[in-house]
Image (cartoon, rainbow over all chains, first blue to last red):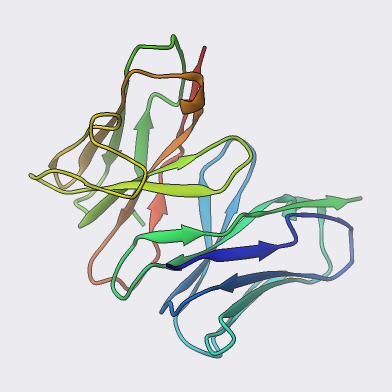
Length: 112
Length: 115
């Protein structure tokens, strides 16, 4: 059974600092996703990672995937207040499915 | 990406009653799903809404409690039946398109409070 774990659950960081969120999954999954959720809002897609070694960057966020280690990371560079949100990783339950198992989420607060 | 509209956006309901949540997509989509997000928690898949046939439910979820309809490729409903305070959650509709070369997209959610 696929399980997805994220850490940390909570992250409070100063503006301008760097940090990494980790997402481990327990069994083989061919796709890994990162979403952002603002309070009271739905999920906004950030990254889709499809293969081992995939790296994607958008602004101050960079995501990577290591399928051998069953690990994805979301790296935040020089954090700004606007990045405050909850970040979820999700893994596909099987090949060719949109059925996702979500991680616990990381609640990020960037302090000015 | 598809534009997904959910109604209602929020509701407060009495225990023992039922609420039907609608999910409307602006284009035909292959797959539709319903998720639940309990307060402060992650998302859990409730079921896959199958067009023209019975929904496929995940472990821990049953049709009597969460009946789902999907009459066409753009619309689905989720009913939360005989509600109790434990049903207080955000319910989200999700859609995906075949072939599976993009991510799933989510509606804005329905925030349900049962009193």
